[in-house]
Image (cartoon, rainbow, N blue to C red; front, side, top):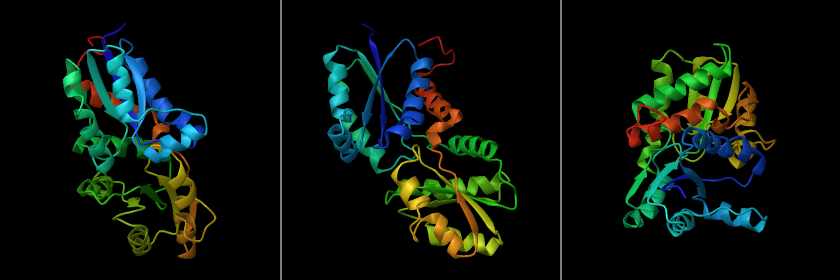
Length: 264
């Protein structure tokens, strides 16, 4: 048996089709990159874990996954979250994982996708190279949002798009600031008549299908239309972009101190 285990931790989703294209895709890339290790999965959302279990699809919680890794005798445990910001879900993961620090010779916990300034630059490059939208069309990225102070990451990302020359990219959130009303106000002020709305979420699940693109009057697409802006939804989770998986791998290589990918 190998001595090293990698635990990939996601918030989770109950939409199994998009799960395969996003979370599983990221897991597969990490498995390929670190083929010397055994890879395990956990979700931090207890609601999603329970719903999946009721549907016959079992996913460990963080504690269950770590205890399983301990029982199998691994000496080293490397935990990589697929969370976007270092918010409440990330802090919950760190708090839970650190309870088991003494059970391994080595335990390390990686950073979420958007943690350092260079991460903001990387995601700007990935998304701007993938959208193909005209400069006279607004591109709106819908994030989740959080009451945690790390929510400022979304505003910083919006600023980074502008600083890098992409004036037509805007970042908003479902549950925090910048909110939908703020984004609409700015886009109207800037004079845009068209908008493409995309999820700034790892999976295109509940928020993307309901809050963003549903037929409800309150969906982001319909709110833009009601304000006289031609809008369409691009239902594609961040996990579907190869470059996003590479960002998590780069985080892992950084905390592992690796320059040669074969050195681990």
